[in-house]
Image 1 (tube, protein in one colour):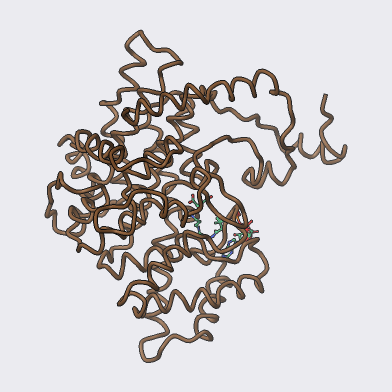
Image 2: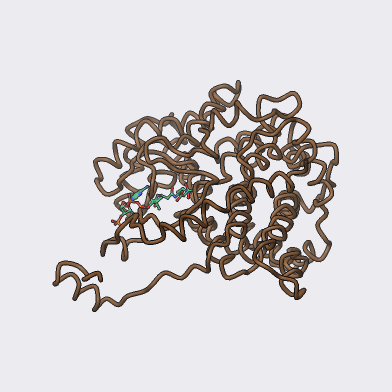
Length: 442
Ligand code: NMX
Ligand code: MLT
């Protein structure tokens, strides 16, 4: 049974659960909204639904019910590796089932047939100023593919219906996850390797092929696999996933939706924080460590300088998490287990920041979570393997995040989620309800 057929079985089984909840229990209250939530970024309001992943503030992310170590353990591994292929993870995210090796091989073979990127996409990227940010190039490249959207063709065919619409989202989603690493590698080679382009190796899995296309070593294959899986999904309220969901809820196709999601990922409070971390760390080295080793005292001073200048410490804090991000720990464990990397001066510096920053942020007293997030650790690994152009790091995040966003909108369409349209109120209304002690609910 192909992945699409397996998914159809899952969807057919699942749909009655959503229908029953809306029909029989639609008026059951699951949350309330306060003024600070309305003004403060809708924090913690339970008003989105996804079964792809769940983020617990203490434990961190679970993909389809599994923690990161459980996910890595359960999935079939890439040849000669202790890490799973991205293809096996895609099967798992979509269906919730751990695939067999034969099922993984089928997905890998299918992705090969979807991987070709038309030359007009590369032309569109080449047409941009060469000093455009790589995230602009990725977003433009993805959007340029939109004319091939199978969902749009279905919508315009006259045969559109809600029951099978998800199948066309699935087709676009699969094309996007297969093609986005190829676009990302093109951008890297265009901007940072003198436009030395490398063709797809059809014998390699997605992570290994990405390493091959950007001219990386064998060791980097696992870095790519780990990186794309770790960055894939963080339930559906984060900016990139939520934007993708919102845009797709208007029945904009997956290309429009994920291009928009990428634009959200490019914000410094979201995915761009990974490049900000490297920038901060290297500036610290250049300023304080020319003639001396980094010390906790020097780091403490630099952190306070940043905070006193009114800036955030990149890579620290989180809107949901209240502990160290397990994605941080997973990457840290990779570093500690890798000879060379564990002795690397930049990794040691990042580790020392980890020892100091939570205390400084706690003393500073503003953030609800002084612990590091995924971005505090990811750049140092890329840097060690020679991917030193840190404005590319958010593109790597975007390649991984495509998996979660595409799995989510495939299920959004399967379950017929409505166009998203929360209700606005005015400041005067808030003031009135504040005086009255709350809005009178019917
Ligand atoms: N350094 C300094 N101040 C911080 C930090 C930080 N790392 N994190 C939060 N704060 C401040 C925040 O700016 C806010 O200040 P104010 O009251 O003046 O507006 C206050 O603490 C309360 O914020 P929180 O409720 O703790 O955090 P919030 O949910 O609003 O924001 C982040 C979450 C992740 C945007 C925030 O922690 C942050 O800006 N972190 C640094 C940037 C970063 O690492 N982003 C990547 C997140 C992960 N990702 O990949 O998307
Ligand atoms: C993410 O992976 O999207 C970030 O950790 C931000 C979030 O979850 O809000």
